[in-house]
Amino acid sequence: MNWLDKVIQAYERGEIPKGGIHHIEVAHDDGCSLLAGTGPCDCEAEVSLDIKEDT
Ligand SMILES: [Zn+2]
Image (tube, rainbow, N blue to C red):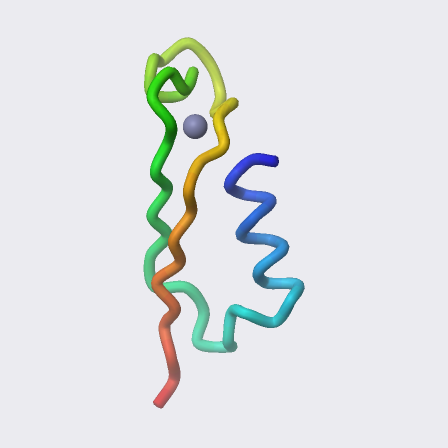
């Protein structure tokens, strides 16, 4: 599963409020094709969402 799928799943689970996401941080594994510049992401990237709350 790539990181974008994780973001979409979080959204579908209702984990992302209406305020939306302020920032998405994606930590790719060493050896990821994206980091190597040889292709799209093919690693199990760690995704952290910085949720923007409407307060
Ligand atoms: Zn990657």
